[in-house]
Image (cartoon, rainbow over the protein chains, first blue to last red):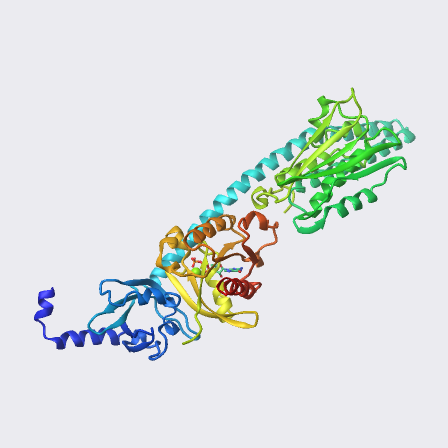
Length: 388
Length: 166
Ligand SMILES: Nc1nc2c(ncn2[C@@H]2O[C@H](COP(=O)(O)OP(=O)(O)OP(=O)(O)O)[C@@H](O)[C@H]2O)c(=O)[nH]1
Ligand SMILES: [Mg+2]
């Protein structure tokens, strides 16, 4: 090949290179020691201004001035910048390969600019399809993890429905049968009583349903991060909760200012303090709401001097509806408060536990770990079977 | 000779909106169709810091290069990196700190910021800045579609570069 070339006269070589340059396959730029363009050749580099600094038009070399200068007198070094497209105000170049070398004979830096091969629309389209697919696949993986979580939620939800709502449903049916019998016997007064009981029962069930909804969505509402003063938050909550005059609530510790899920923190504190008030068996008492700030979390405790919770009941109180029996038809306590709190906390990487030594000693202490940087919110996002 | 231009890299996984961001920045336009970048696209942009122009050369990179990017000549002499993630694709957000770390290993001390993009598509949960920006990177919630925060991200980067090179 080289032998063939050298046997050629220069003329065909020159005309071939001219043809290729005119067709825009390549171009050459001569660069002086000030890194200004002294000459150019070929349509492909038509956008390069002669006399101006090289980097004014060949943007990819901006910042690489030192690297260009080190080429001087080193005929074997190359500075390659492959596959670049240069955007100007009104235009863009084709995809280019840039290679700068030193020409000993011309005592100049030469930049060879060539059209990157395969810059066809076909290649771009192929890449688009491959990448679009990669993105879609990653999405499927993420969705399936989310789906598993949602399924878990759904299962739990189904079991709550079947265990806890079945009994009151059956009760409702019995009451209806009773009413039927009483009406048949002409006992209007008793029938009316029974209808009243049915109405109460159905109201109770609808309360259960709405607190169940609260429970299921506890992990996903209250999404906004806010800059808050936790001292102000806890004070507002304490002031807003109705309680007997003899019930003292102390706020202890240094409550910091922080960026956190304010509405969720409000939900947690409100439920715990409200619980401490409503489960107290006396008209006088002391409730303490305290915080200790640790490196990664706030340790919050809500401690009361009420009757306490025997160890054997301490797990059950966090389960949905488990306190229902004890609460009776008391509509204000659907037995979901602690379950909601527990669920909300676990969705943000926090936790709650309870300490009480009843009946030996009085009093209960709930301890909450509230993370300062709430870990991987998006990852723990749980999908509710009820909400949208 | 014109003022030296600073080289700024747009990094991040495929399809997160790097090209859309630079197109919004330089030409104030947006295209919904996805045209992947092959190699790099290079733009000139003039940012401003304290009322003075800061010329930038923005390198919009190919998200497909992955780690190869950090061994590539493309990164040579870069003054800053803007790392882009797509808020609707958690994995692209998760990978941002690692990209930042790789960039810093190759080019210590440069300004690095995070652009959480496509916020126009998002009404979900908040992202925790502290979780993401472990090394104190600035975080911008951007949308190439609406243009939200795009200019600001580059203005802050210009400030950081000027501060460092002053
Ligand atoms: N809604 C919305 N879509 C966006 C936004 N930014 C980019 N997109 C779309 O996302 C897709 C990918 O955007 P590109 O800018 O090409 O992504 P890229 O990061 O340059 O991708 P690669 O070049 O493959 O690395 C395109 O369809 C864009 O229209 C945004 O802020 N909002
Ligand atoms: Mg791109």
